Image 1 (cartoon, rainbow, N blue to C red):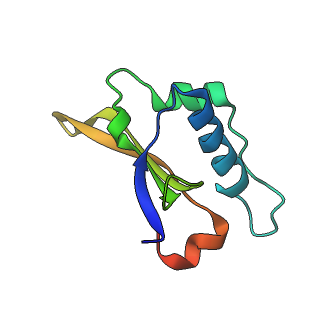
Image 2 (cartoon, rainbow, N blue to C red; image 1 turned 60 degrees about the horizontal axis):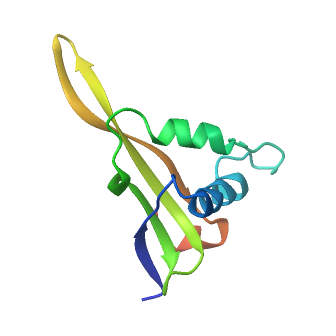
Length: 107
């Protein structure tokens, strides 16, 4: 296989750098490549580590053999309310795939 699933650890500075670089270069942008989000590492740590967070909900796609991080999807716990019923759920955020790999149907 060309790619492999990989958990990533946002408490590890090196892995957080990889996530930051991927998001900075390949996350939300406009059609003209003029506007792009630039989340700070401290914000990413805050957003991905709320109370009850789970490392196994931070999943990446790497080039096979432990190579470059080329995609991520993250989940964090949340409490959701529908009318008068409240339940625990997962909020998905930061779905990102390297621009050159979007035609490979990784998302």
